[in-house]
Length: 285
Image 1 (cartoon, rainbow, N blue to C red):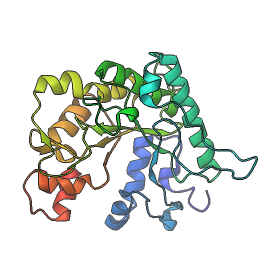
Image 2: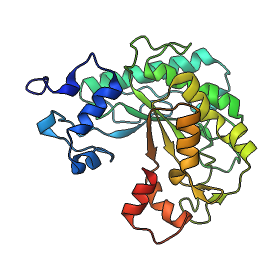
Image 3: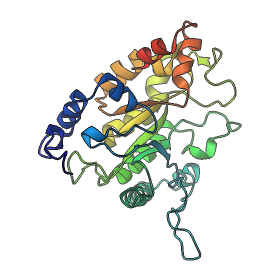
Image 4: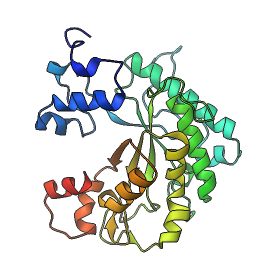
């Protein structure tokens, strides 16, 4: 919008990645940093007006206040939990739920009821123990089913057809964030030194990595959340092999990686200890 529509990154004919690079080139270091936090800071000189929020929870419906209050008000739809929905073994249902959820989010964003279109979900950690407090968040214990569930939810929510085709090219109805990567299924002691698990390469590849891989390769998921834990004594949010070599280079993921709340701080306790906040952030980035 004027007077910023003449800036290079506003050229809608350019690829999205190119526009993002042009925008970043116009920012100061301080401004770049301000865009990496939940509740991004507005930059008026570039026309970035809104404090965009990463992270509207959307596991089985948009977790936000009702857009329209009162006797004739309207609230976001609350769908069946992931474990209940997955029990249908119905890909069309999963896609339809994702699509409805994404459309509600888009409407709410365009009418000023949501501060962002970055939806945290689906949660696809395999259920390893029924005592885990988040079992209803997850489709189940089968990594293949979790991946299929997640891929269809993402496709529907981001605006694609069930076959993976995005009718508007690079543009998305919303951005979904699969969580938590990887091998995360505890609540007590998370982000602590003891929250580390020795897992074989085969188990990682065939089981714990499978849900995110399906979301990347089938649905081009826009983001994922790295988890609090450490795998083989390397913090998930600071694991270059896992996040860069495997996910980005091998699977072709090109989206955003968000740390779980406070997970960057856990890099120090998991790995070497005594690191400064700056060092932990550098490791994560």
